[in-house]
Amino acid sequence: MELIKRFFKAPGQDFFLFGPRGTGKSTWLKTAFKGAFFVDLLDTETFRTYASRPETLIGTVEALPSGSVVVLDEIQKLPELLDVVHLLLETKKGSLRFVLTGSSSRKLKRAGVDLLAGRAVVKHMHPFMAGELGGKFSLDEALKVGMVPLVVSSPDPEEALKAYVSLYIHEEVKTEGIVRNIGGFGRFLEAIAFSHASVLNLSEVARDCQVKRKTVEGYVSVMEDLLMAFRVPVFTKRAKRLLSSHPKFYLFDPGVFRVLRRVGPLDAIRELEGAALEGLVAQHLRAWIDYGHSDCRLYFWRTRAGNEVDFVVYGPDTFFALEMKNTRELRGKDFLGLVEFLKDYPEARAIVLYRGRDRLKMKGIPCIPCQVFLKALHPTASMGE
Image (cartoon, rainbow, N blue to C red; front, top):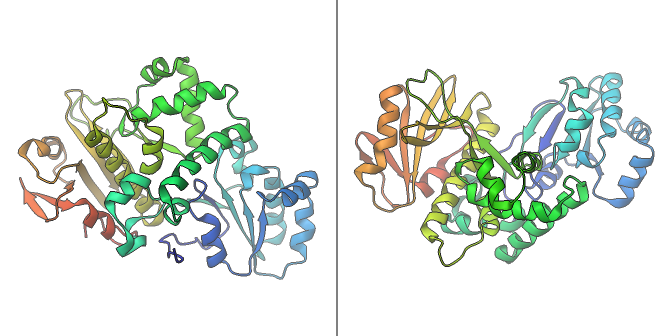
């Protein structure tokens, strides 16, 4: 596959760029910053050099001309370099620009990203958005193999996806030494896949994988630190009803979900596809927010009575409520959650996404084919345009 132009834009200052492995951070950087000085900490010899003497970086960058860009790739492998970067930011005062990438934030949290004293902003790179792929985007294919660039660009995406999940999730955990009980973590991965696109019940997951609730809470944090999962909180602003207090859980990519979620004779394929679809939309909304609408936040809405809206996007000038329906034909009951939400929040713009082909309007609510909505979602445009 030829190089795909990404929607992500670099800020005009030093920055961290986080994203799961395989989302194209290094490829994007080599295109955006041609001629930059790269320190690849996945390279064994490079790692050994800077691990033994982190201060080597000072002498190295001293030889660079003013205005150079220094990229430290996979900085979580050697968080000790943050002290050196902080010193260089103080002494060089704008003569150099630093970009630090990472596919895990766990070690950096311990080392203290705040050592850079806010001099470097934090940005995120996500899997492909449909709009980046343009005519190459297929909703059916995305629901099967996901949108991770490393997988999508492979000649055999399904095999690449299996290898990605095995090598990245399992091996990364082992390499980082994050989890002592690898067997327990493996059972957790199978169990947590059942929580994808659902309200997260840690006690239930603990029972399924036969470990303590506190252990499961730690495992979920590991997944979030590895940028492989995220939680969406309940929208509670100006609440007029009793609401659910638990967040919803998502694996970061529908392809990863499909691999981890074991399928048997009793599983409903339509239900799995619906969860994958919701995860795909969540992935796109997070990217849309991070790439161009950082003042917005992603929520969901669920009352104790059971009324639910899949996503609420809320910001200073943005208020959308979106409901996903994995069906080609819509019925009146498909609008119940949105109708109830609009009673409490008439200011919101409601949208139903579904698997049909035509744009519709039912009960005063626009209904947009999911593929059309995703391909039109661009960081520079308002939602639904």
